[in-house]
Length: 91
Image 1: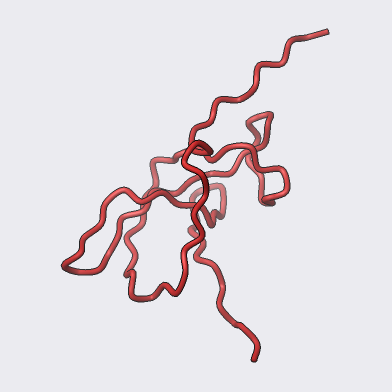
Image 2 (image 1 turned 120 degrees about the vertical axis):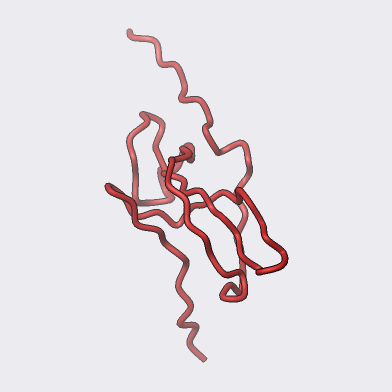
């Protein structure tokens, strides 16, 4: 049996992101407000691939989702959100 499930992705002005942070949970309606996170590499440049993921930067964009539509959630370590970029000294 083939799995046709696809991850949730949010579209912002400049990017598409499958990364979110839970901001509010409404247990009565089974809905959640999620802020959209932007994946960046070690240089602070937005990326599309998890291969070079260094940090997840919080954006001002949010979405509200019905949690009844989800079958799984893959958590990331919270310390990835707004992780400071490394300081690289010039040679």
